[in-house]
Image (cartoon, rainbow, N blue to C red; front, top):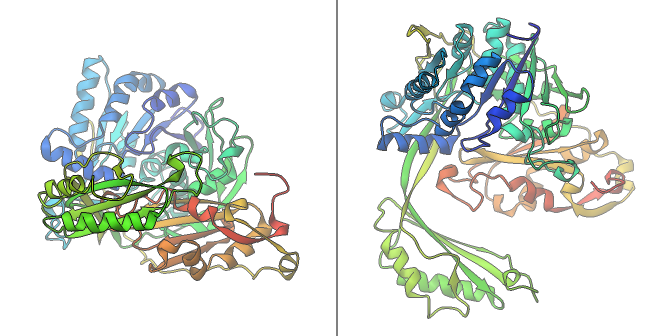
Length: 575
């Protein structure tokens, strides 16, 4: 490694399949790095890649990563930067072959290793996981570590945890073992912060108006230390910002509770300490780790059936009556009823609107069925048939289309010993990666609720205003569940926030969650409340249970809701 042995500089150049293509070159040219990583996989991506491979056995990996390597492999080799990517998807050997062909074409010599063992699809039925299209275990970082330690220039994996591509190089660099739980936890937290790319540098950030330049935010870097502590930063002269709040926002993204479980370690989110360490530098320290759980999570992707959808524009007066008429006519015109038919009316209209678009609401009908013929032509015919005999002003946003397949994601679990975790080195040697010998079942923590709102805060009066006046939030998806992490920036506001966001109040503020179970966790070290909404997203992102299938905007909806805020907490200047 090129820097002092006590610090490993790990950069990120991708937060998802489809992220900025130029990011790999930006990161390699922007400043000093030891390792460059990225995340190309998500629940939906695994389904897409599995379907790709069904059509062509030679595919099933992230092609955009290969395009980036075509541009940057020589640059990475010249700079001595190791590239670690989970872009192998469901066909890591295929990606390795493509990388080697690319290197040969460019006259380059690159050592390429890959990690395997995540694919449990052939054994799914025997493991009690059913017969999914794909079954992939979330592997940890020790296989990656062995590949990096072997001198590989490029390390490719399939399904590993998002943080593993960061944790693995740190294990190799510092020589950590399975019992270095605090160090592993610290690196895991650093990995969680940077694995989603520019979300750590101002992207999807609640207080985005405070960031001077967010047109092209720079990608993040974690400077990981031997004890597992780290500093999150970015290359100089890049846009965006790294602050305690941008890091807090990402820390709260897609988490369940205070125990953040992974295959190598369970990281205690309630132990994290954040400190601004200079411009665009945030130190993460104090992270405690516990033995990992005895089971590893498995991503199960299946084809759930077929769906069709149409949105009708409803304009002007009598919106509800017009929508009701369209619904009754459409259902009467259907010659065969689908297994599932859902309607939503989005009241985007405003009274006495100055533009036609502002006077319009959107009525959407979605049909699902195992048989594409049921939600294909009969659905489209019904939409066309009622067009001239329905409510005044009837028109769709687009013509009805053909039925399309949709996917279903479900989580499964298997013992840590089940995946045959192996690393295939550049010379073809295969080394087994044994599972942890010490594990600890996950148990709920006693919630750390602060003291109730001080009396003087109540006596000072309140103002009815959006929650986002004083609170930031970030939301995301975990299978069919959604999480919302809400935080405040001042110690004085923390007791008020924790008192406010009870299950009853969350149900009131977010009526769409009224019939769903909530799990609320308090993280006083981050001045944060994490809310998990069970079942909001149906059977996962590909199921499209609601118009925001990944719950990306759920937090902003909550921030827009009006609550009684103590006047003492209101900002003195506009945020």
